[in-house]
Image (cartoon, rainbow, N blue to C red; front, side, top):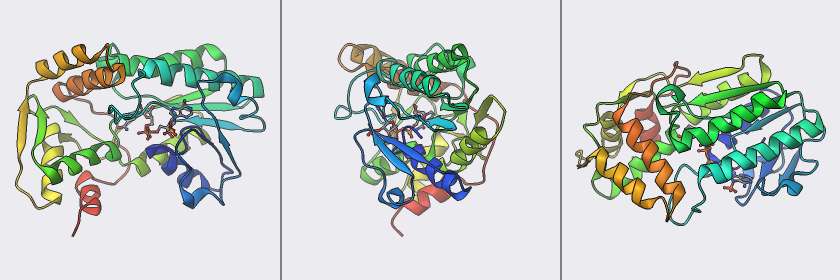
Length: 281
Ligand SMILES: NC(=O)c1ccc[n+]([C@@H]2O[C@H](COP(=O)([O-])OP(=O)(O)OC[C@H]3O[C@@H](n4cnc5c(N)ncnc54)[C@H](OP(=O)(O)O)[C@@H]3O)[C@@H](O)[C@H]2O)c1
């Protein structure tokens, strides 16, 4: 289980343990959440970008699951290397190690919407991992989700402090998914035979609707800062030499703010309830 300390990773561990699987966790800088320290079989700390550090990590493992990647909360404190410089080589190193150890199956988390957004660097970095899996000869599955609820929690934090930027007119639609509902799809992918799982949540909302739900959960009037997508795209271009990660993710955010990103629905949890749980009573 690579990316074990991340937003999705911790839900996948919980779900895999709930179904009775033995879990080994690969962590990097962040610690494994305390709830797992006594229940996972083994914790291996490594920088997956450094191939020798992965030696032996897949030995005796049946299925490798990876949601390992550079943060989708790019900020100036969280590293500037692009997704292509982190996600692609780190996961390719893990694929090599999985091959060497003879694992049965490799499940990887990419991004939904490759038909519309596949030209963007953020998506390409993930899909290059899928291409490497395809070439590896390993049995594999790829899960391609829409946005996780945990990523939209940022709107709640912004709404608590003041107005929230809205890119474009906010009418583009999507169906974000609760990290726990997605974890269930991920464990299904580990247990099953199917190769491709494009997945979103049960409710289709507009980008404006997502921000409105954040304000509603806080019982505050909606306050928006309109932001043309052209400005966000221009900022992303300017940012590219300084912070490629922020640049590439901003370009992706501009694109999904202007185009629908809806995937087959899964799960039952809705965003308003999630925001309400995170908000003060
Ligand atoms: N969040 C979304 O809305 C969304 C939507 C679609 C797809 N995705 C994709 O789904 C995946 C998981 O997303 P997430 O939100 O759960 O990400 P996350 O919370 O940032 O977790 C990523 C994990 O990868 C680990 N990691 C990063 N670099 C590593 C390295 N060099 N060696 C070993 N481990 C490393 C991180 O550990 P450290 O923190 O210790 O470095 C962390 O545990 C990502 O590939 C993301 O692009 C996310």
